Length: 207
Image (tube, rainbow, N blue to C red; front, side, top):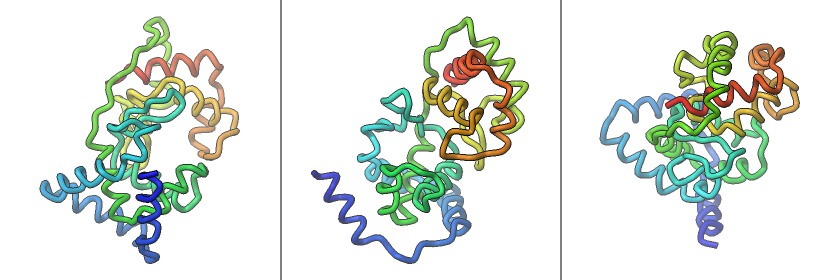
């Protein structure tokens, strides 16, 4: 109930005049460049995300195998995904309902907080890691980077939940997910189910 009244209060107080995505990203960069403002944003984000902890964990490391880790993601990437959920570009009724009540500054704080957290590598099937590494090098490294940590526009995959990775990669391959990305569809088109499992095992054990 406490969470419900908190969200209701945010909804009532949310500004109807949101900044443009570019302005919000510029604000994020300005905060990142100011150590005092960065610390304030991280502390604010920790308070705001209490209602995210049931699924994504208190520190952004997911408690559920099919829910992604948010810890360690690039803050600009996180902020853009928050915007997409809020606008309906990414579809998830629960996520959309939570995010719509957040003001721009609160969204920045959430992204900053999760980005500041570390994501520990998960256990993997060691026998599958070499194959997964080879496939990642052929198909994914150009965009996601040598260490699979992504960038401002592309998700970090290192340390991500294996089940979540398998589900997401399969959806891109089969074009059955709620997100469409031509590059991802092309990169995953030839992957067999067992190869997807290998890639996921490689990625999940990366620091």
